Length: 347
Image (cartoon, rainbow, N blue to C red):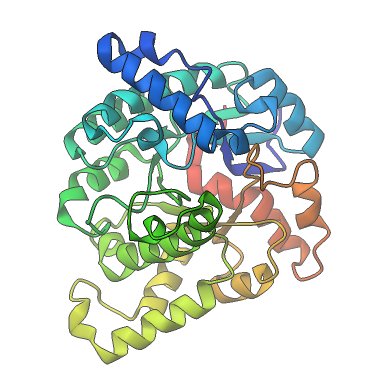
């Protein structure tokens, strides 16, 4: 890519479940176990992640990116990360994360100027997560560190995660909190179909993560940390920020680690280019959300190649909106992602 990008996909996906040789990458009985779990995962929901060959073939993806007018894409794995192919064995998740991150780095090597890897880590083992985060950034060109917002029974402001936040801050890459539609927690397990789990888990888990990072004092404690909260849209932001303010006013003692009300802190973090959310290109309340948090806080995400993405046409959906002016569209489609990911995004 010889010039600055005009459109950056801040959250695209790949699906390595069937094409990655898990048995070889991990080895032994564990590798065989992961290979079988990967097949079960793909049979359950993976087809919805692989409606386009670009899910596993970088050359096909580059063609599709050009078709849709996307110059550069940051790529994530399946929304559940390592747990999607662990078969419930948490012990395996750190080695799964390493194998996936290596596969994704190789995938992106087809065109390092246009394809950028985001590295998954498994939060239940923070020491392993720190080691993998450092390895992925320093040796595999990762431009961000990804994890799911729901980790066992711990909120994201739990001190057990502070070592990881400190490291990510020092590595100068963003913390990427990615929603998931099939996590093993109360948000999803009450429902018997993947459709209902998917419908409820994304738009609830990311507002909760926003609350943890803001009201729990994470962004105040780690004052150089950049975060993005992904794949839940943004239409909920005005209502949620108002609700967080109300509860802080009623019970400020419940948030002892913050120095101001949540809306004031969010405005500060937006002004400092430290907090971002991704939008759906066709969501009805996008304009209202941007009016609430400002034009510099929302990034464009194609969600390609998932079954619910718009392809082709995601970029056109943004450009044809009449509730955003030209400046807002430019920031949404490009500038904000460049700010979020920083210098590693460009050659």
